[in-house]
Image 1 (cartoon, rainbow, N blue to C red):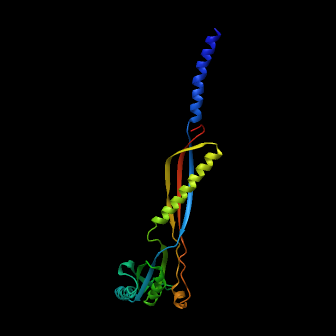
Image 2 (cartoon, rainbow, N blue to C red; image 1 turned 60 degrees about the horizontal axis):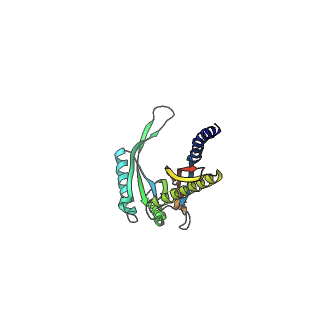
Image 3 (spheres, rainbow, N blue to C red; image 1 turned 180 degrees about the horizontal axis):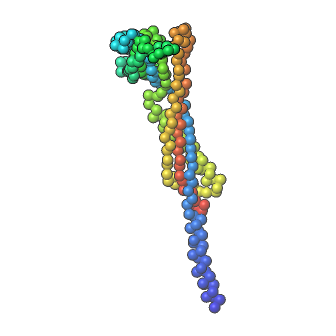
Length: 237
C-alpha cells in the first residue's frame, strides 16, 4: 500500500517539476530604446534674394523689375551655374497713401522678384552675397545651410543609436540576472535633421570690410532613435 502511494506521489511531482522547468525557461521580452545625435558641417547653402522695383504704373514696375532681375541673374551666372538660380515668387502690388479724410489713394506700384540661389561651394558664399548686393538685391530674406547628401551622417546616427540600445539591453539583462536571447524586432523613429538658419542684413554686408562679416554656417544635427526588442531567459540556455 505504501509503495503504491509513493508511486502515485512521484507521478504527480514529475509533471509539476517539468511545468516549473518550462516556466523558468519561458522567454521574457525586453524593450530597449537608443538615441544618438551626430553633428556634421553643412556643405551647401541656399538663400532667397529679393529684387524690387517701383514705378507709377504696374506695367512699368513689371518691366523695370524684369530688366533689373535679368541683369542681376547675369552677374550671378559669372560665379555659379544657371541651374542654381531660380525665381520662386513674382508679385506686383499697389502702393497706397492713406489721407486722414477720404479713401486710400494709389501712389504707384511695387514689383518684386524673389530669386533662390543655391551655393554648392561654401567658399563662394561670401562672393555670391557681395555680387548679389552689388547687382541690385534689395533684401536677403532667407539663408539656410544643408547637406548635399545626408545618408552617411544618417547611417552613423542610426548605428550609434542601435549600439546604445544594444548596450542597454545587455546591462538590463545582467541586472535582472537574465540571459539575453535573440533580437526579434527593430523599430526606427525617423531621424530629424535640424538645419540652422542664418539671417543676413544687406546693409551690414555693404558696410563691412572684406575681412569682416564672415558667415558661420554652424553645424547640422541629425538625430536618430531606435527601439529594439529582445527575448531573455531566466533559466539556463
